[in-house]
Image (cartoon, rainbow, N blue to C red; front, side, top):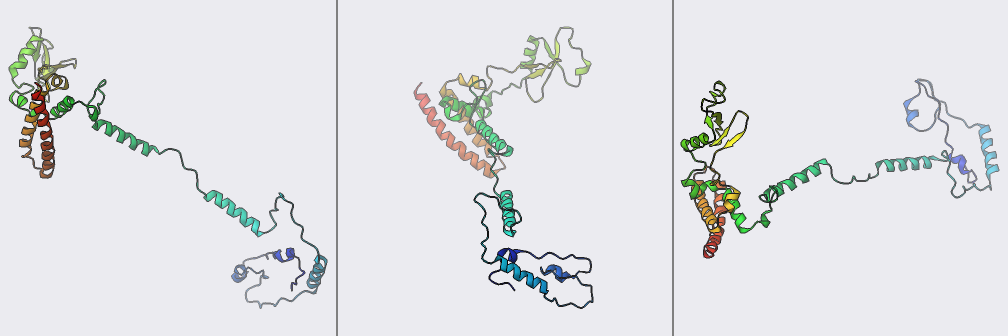
Length: 295
């Protein structure tokens, strides 16, 4: 038995693990106490204390009595085999370093940058029409006249001027006369491959684009636009008109759009559009009144 004079190193010393084989009982492996492997069926022998071991322990206790345990010098490294606490400390340190928080990456990922670019592009697209080299003009930077023109360009076909006079013109004789002046002749797609490039009068063949009235194309693929450019509903032509005329055209376009929207099958969307048009109509009538007073 150990007494108060037994050195700590003797208490911390672990018993050597016994050799095991296929006949070793599982209870001896799970118990943590070294036991001599025994064959199955053999009776267990009770261990007897050895006189030699008892005498050696007493001698060792006598020699170690009164001696202090040497302390390690400051800054000296602790030996790897000094105890189980050092191994557990090193394991916990390594696990903490592996499981610790990793530094965050700078900036967002590709998805974040792509989303930001799409939002920025959408915002710039919604802000208005172009000013410098066809680029966008911000809506808040428009003048009153530019804002009226922008609203008119969205619904010019509802205005009374263009409802009375179709644009482009639908009269076939109008384009036939212009084709003759430029030495062209109109042919159909079905007969295109069977007709010569020029006829006996020197007129080259062209065909009309079905989706664009008054626009033709020749054998070289060039576009020939014979629509009247002076009455074209475009930004440059509308900006040449005075403010009172533009307001009158826009008011008639709003009125005719309100009449036409009553035929819509989408009732909820139609109601929202009607409310928006009525609000804009009140505003444009105020602007029209001011423009007429300045004439």
